[in-house]
Length: 282
Length: 269
Image 1 (cartoon, rainbow over the protein chains, first blue to last red):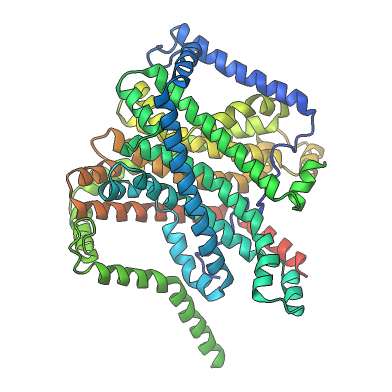
Image 2 (image 1 turned 30 degrees about the vertical axis):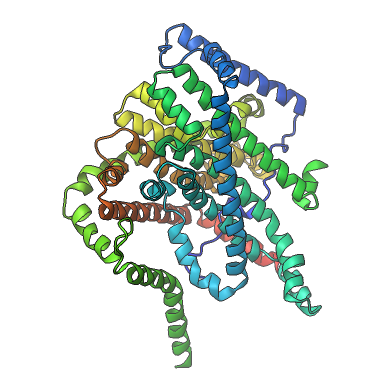
């Protein structure tokens, strides 16, 4: 092993996180406390600007943000922006996942390739994708392609690295058994490698989904491609502080939705996997 | 003799494995771009020649790179202190955790770059804003990973601590933080990449110095070759910082990697 091909980070070794259900106490009580926490948070944001602790010009009270949000929901322009953002997110994510799976399996199953690409992957991975912003602007202007370039670059590594860990994680006993029974290459990939790597792949997809959303909105914010990020920028420069906050809350809600969807997908696809089965029947 | 030859052979193979592809890619880039007429993709030779002039033979290293790094480290260090501190607090008490969890999940889900306009309102365009931007993005991965790590502290160890009457700061330092450190380090790694991105973005928005500012300025003035040197430098920086964190992780977690290695060996026997 080369020094750059390091031990998988702790997170990667537990491909399916045990999630939030590990609590010992009554779950209903926890949910109630959580609701209370959220209510307190909102109330605090209402009171702080009203008492003048922070100027309402910087931080409008919750009620005003809620009003702006309600107004936004009625505007066609807002929904176009949401659609644009989701389009950039989804296309970028899909391309990154497809690339990550193909490249990951090819590199992962050929030891020589793995050995000779490790240092390059470790070098390219930490390059911040925003470094590509100026290049994207020059090449594509403020179009969807610019967004895609950034999203795909950022999300690809998340998937690739997880797939590489996954392919490496094949149980030696199972592998030897497969060889003993004389399974063909295809059968081995289908019944041995794929199920082993799947939990890792799904972790990769979950991480990549969050990163892709961040990069899509960032690209819109900075490059000016159409979407929520661009709307936030407009609201800010136009002094529409209420709508700016409302839009930011929308991006947060999108983020939550992406996380929840990814977890759902993980559970649905891995319903056979011990870590998921154990979770549902404690 | 054979053994020595074998060792040398392995060493050579290792060097080839580490350097082979990067060198091949660079050569490929060099050759393919050698007589590039495309305005956007200048020859690599020109980029490398310009790198020296743009970054090393001017005061840019001091005037732009240093401020960027200082802002990044200030925000990152603040995020570590805040994230680990609050994480230990929230992770240690089940009710506190239940109270804060939904709010934290929501705040984490907000893409950090959208806070740049908000923080610009509060803190103007100065260094404070940029440090706050880095902090606001870095703190969530650290905080949430710490909470997870603290939650998973081994019960036997907790009981042992109780038996020996280890409590207070000693308990937090020797048991809680130590047990959670693999998770915390994962958080730091995630936070670092977010931090670099945010540092650059905050400088692209509103600044008169910094790495992000320079790169965007090159792009706006169509100084494409200079822009490429900036991209290279940023990539190099991201890589170096990641390596530094890795080295720190190796030192801080050597007991953990050792533990896992022995567990793995046992499992396969």
